[in-house]
Every structure is written in C-alpha cells, then in structure tokens.
Image 1 (tube, rainbow, N blue to C red):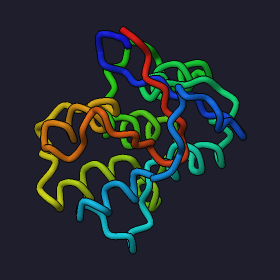
Image 2 (cartoon, helix red, strand yellow):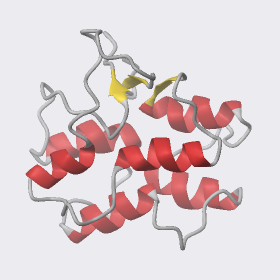
Image 3 (tube, one colour):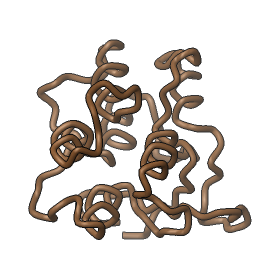
Image 4 (cartoon, one colour):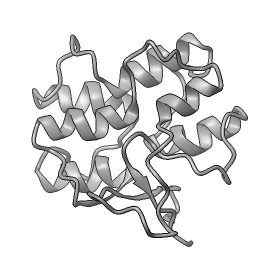
Length: 166
C-alpha cells in the first residue's frame, strides 16, 4: 500500500477463486444501504460509475489492473485524460477534470460528485471543506465515521479489491 493509502483493485472477468480477492458482492450500494445511509431506491452505485459509466465511454476495460487511486492517475492518465501533476479529489474527477475534457456533463445522473457530496452530504456525512480522495472515501472517511471496519470484506461496486501489503 502506498503512503497515500491507495487500495489496489483488480477488475477481472470471471476471477472468483483467489483468496486475495474480495467478492464483488455486496456492492457499496448494498453496504451503505444496510447501514441506513443509502436508499435502495436510489440508482447510485460506485461500481456503476467506475465500470458501467466509464466503460460505456471506452475508458475502462475489465482486464485492467487498477487501484482506486490508479483509476484517477494511471487509467485516465494513460489515455491522456489526466496529467499526473493535477491534485485529484472525488469532486475534481467528475466535475473539474472530466467536465473540462468534455467527458462528463453536470446534467448526467451518474457522477462521483453527486454520490459523495449530494448523497453523503444529505446524510450529514460529508462537508464541502473536507479534502477527500477516492481512497479516503472508502476507508478513511467512512472509518472515521464508524461506518466501516478495516476488517470488513466490502467491495466497491463491481470491483474486486485486493489490499497490498505495505
């Protein structure tokens, strides 16, 4: 694991046997919904964003080896969509960076910013002043609020997570 606390994830088609990989079920939607933080009626899942939304735009292939942090740096940067010099936050990913590149319209109903700010902020879990990365959302931010234990085997949507040894 890097100093920034990135979580390694491998998105693979049909990989279920490795003890290092966490099953893609339950999704973040299910996990948060069980805690009363997310209504099942909301069509909001981080997995839907990272795989479905980006894959529909040809930005994500299932066989790629990606960490959650690498999604913003490596995967998008490899495609020339994100300079490594940019400081990245979840809001920056959806609104600043992708919107600047014409890949994301504010009117779309699939945005990390909508999930992290609107959905979580509505429940009092997110303040605009917080400087959170995607990794911070899944581990630090939720752990700080007692919503997730590091020992829990929770995947982020359709991703298979694999935590690297430090």
